[in-house]
Length: 263
Image (cartoon, rainbow, N blue to C red):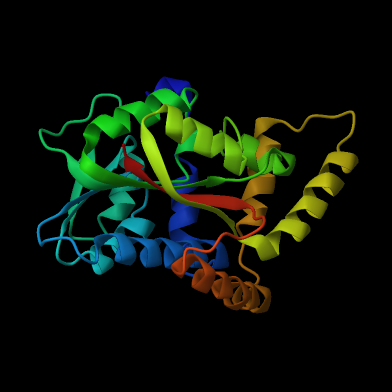
C-alpha cells in the first residue's frame, strides 16, 4: 500500500486525537480489544512481540502497552502525521513503514489491525503478507466495519473500499492462511439506529451525490461528542464487552471483531 492509493485522509488525525479518549465508539472498541488481548497473551512467556499496523494517533497502541506490560509492543503507520500524535500517547516503539515492505527482521506473536483492512484495495493480499510477519501459531486480531447495507458518506469520506459481512471476512481469512478462532459482530445496539439513519440519508440524497468535501464535513459531524448521549451509549455498549470476553457471538452489529491464528 502506498499513499498514492488514497487509503486514508491524514486530515482526520487531528480531529480523532481530540475526541478518541471521550467518544463512546473508541472507548468501547478499546475495551473489547483489551479483553481479547488479555485472553490471548495470558499464558505467553515474557518478551512476546506485538505489532499494531496502522496505529494512527496511538489510541489503541496505548491500550496494548498497558495490557501487554510483559511483552514488547511496536506501532507502525504509513503516515507520519498520525505518528506525531502517537508519540504523545506512548513511550513505546513507533515505526514509519509500509506493511507491503515491512522493516522488521523478526516475526510477531500478535499483530493488531484495527479498522485498517477496509481501506486497502487488495485485502486478501494484505492478509497473506501479514501472515508472513506472524510467528508460528501467531495471532491476528482485527476489527472492520460491518454490513454493506450501512455504507454511507462516512465510508466515502474515510476512503473505505468496503464493509464486510461476517461470512465474507471469515472466507478471506481462511483463504489467506488463517484458522478463525472467534468472529463476532459487535456494537449491536447501534445497528438499528445506524441502519435507519443510513437509509434516511440515502433517501434524502436521491438524485444527488455529495462532493468529497461535503462527505468529509458530514463525517466530521458524526464524530462530534454529545455529552449525555455519548456517556449513555458508552455505558450501554459496554455491556457487550462481557459477551466478547466470554467469546459469545452477537447476532449483528456495526463492526466485526475477529481472532485468527496462523494456520
